[in-house]
Length: 582
View (tube, rainbow, N blue to C red):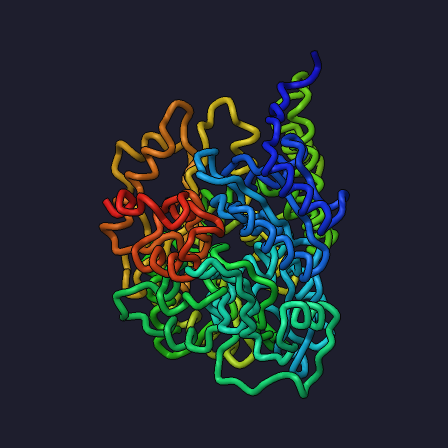
């Protein structure tokens, strides 16, 4: 009587039993889950998406992953590849139960090896390697991965970033991208093939290639010279073209769709090869506040036009700042005192606690959030005085971090700029203020989720959009029609200002239709010439546009891997695809 209803366990057919038996023989009984209740941690998305699978399998070697894929395709079964399951659009879980075949979900987080090559200027990452682990591995070499604070802090995988063309806060690095990977593909001839485009000689057979890679049995002599890119080498030029009528980066950009890059799980990835980046030895953070958004527009235009590209240029609206000061306080405090190393574990434990606490009907909803929120109130004010003063004075905030070579020039520019304008001002952060400014920006990203949990009785849900505006768009600040505005309890605007990529989280009043509201929002974005999503995958929330859909069909002509992504067909061979074209 104390437990909420458990998900019923449906009996497996003989064919299903045979497949489960084969998978169990491959990975062992400890690495396969068939109980619907225990599969919930994997089959429910981090923020969105849920559905049934007949099994969740967790291989601990690449070769076992290959054997699992063989067993699944031979059994005419859908395969969904999943790493950390931290995505925001449900792109690595089943979505509903209207698929035409059974689903096996392969979770890859037990294969975490990272190999540094070419004097640590490049890395090879296996499917379970996380950004946080890669950051620690590169630190002794004074180098960094593509992203260093953001999704890395919640345990996101390196491969997840590549498969989603993820963005990030570091202006000079662009979207996550590589042309070098090792993957399995199911061809139109009905054959599972292993394709080695890592540029590393690992042998000829899948068994040779996967075993040698797993064990690191290669050296400099096996690494081939290549003209292929392992990061976006052109992004600095692209982002500086401030008069261009197109976005700098977005998820479905055709120039960034290449095999593993942007594949959204339509291939089974075993490894990727990526560039690392030299750490900035000295940086300075300038904190800018203004009540005129045109000030920020002009700063972005002036600096990028002179090819002064900051390390990071992050925007926060006052409302987002204020909400995060209360509902992101525990996240801020935890990172401030303990660093980012333990954040992935904290998120994992919280998710497990939430999942199991839901089974007890006498416990309140969102118990972990309520405990953490209460705990945060026991601590004194955590934000620097000058930042809070700006929050009380200015609507728009820009955090500008620049490298050593640009500090003097940017300082001189800002001084002259605000001598002529009364709408805003800036200050140069000391080390502590600069660090805390970017911690506050990170806390903003989860503040709406916490707000929803605490106020779930009055909040319908969060409508979260991440959009890429045209580089020449000077009207970047949104004005909503009154009929939409009235449905929003809060609007949190923040983002990567110099890339013109914005996150827009709308906390919606109870009783409104989120999906209908989203369609209205997307129509407005279409009229503005925006692209969306900008740095998260289309998942099961967005329609994949024609270019992206054709890319998926080229990678996976039989629709074996992650069918239905981007609201496409869930049927084998993409049947009934014509209805999605309407």
